Image (cartoon, rainbow, N blue to C red; front, side, top):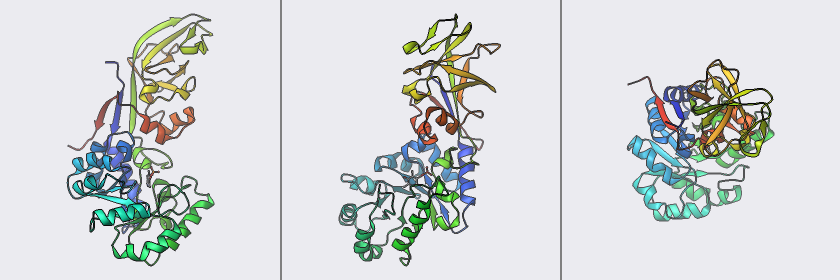
Length: 349
Ligand SMILES: *Cc1c(COP(=O)(O)O)cnc(C)c1O
């Protein structure tokens, strides 16, 4: 078998959700963001594990993603769609009982006309300028819309991973200005916002990356292990090069392992010459370029060539690997490719 094995610890995901849930008051609900196939880890299995842990509200980016989550959860739990009510989505929103977070006057009109009485929320722009109804538009429609009973008024923080950034307080103030007095449930915080403290929690929090072991959730339990099989080993003499572009040249007699996994599997090409793989607790440098299906690793110092090497695990989490690639944990997770054999760990029967 030449495919890598991606092990996903569902108990760790559940524990991370509980930990984030405990950080807010008892009257604050903790949802779970499972967009992009639960950050690449498998929306069905992850959503079910989170529902067992107690999550009752889930967020996806697109209505299409809601289908797998609804199938996994059955009727009951709310599935909110962050991109709102797009043209062509009406039937899906109705049939799967999705709750669109309406982002614009156009979406508000579309929703109220095509699905009157169907649950919805409203996303407000408090300064990120990405999604959401802006202040002036909101002032115009709020009286009518509040009457229609949105399930949630939400907004998103642009700089929550940096607690000292003045944008946090500015967005908090704008969110208050837009929503105070409506009496409606409110949500501002994703993982970063939860860590900013109770003033940012309102009625509902929406953690994503912190469930999957990524920063800014420092205390998160690691969730993924990625083990890549060694396909071939060779001895390389001093002066011989390895890989595309011959970017690495042996300076000592070396043993090079060719390992299954490449940029087609989400091992970013910017990891070339930067990353390490692990044999248990022993690091081995990735040498030469990452290619589409393969990487090459210097295993000269190992007493014995193992059957597989880990690129994600207890010694090197998603954020450590992201640092080596000049990226962020979110990108490492969501890039994890479809070729890996996914194994789910769950202690509970
Ligand atoms: C992705 C996303 C989240 C989750 O963010 P994390 O930083 O992963 O916790 C929450 N809300 C919105 C609007 C998002 O787009």
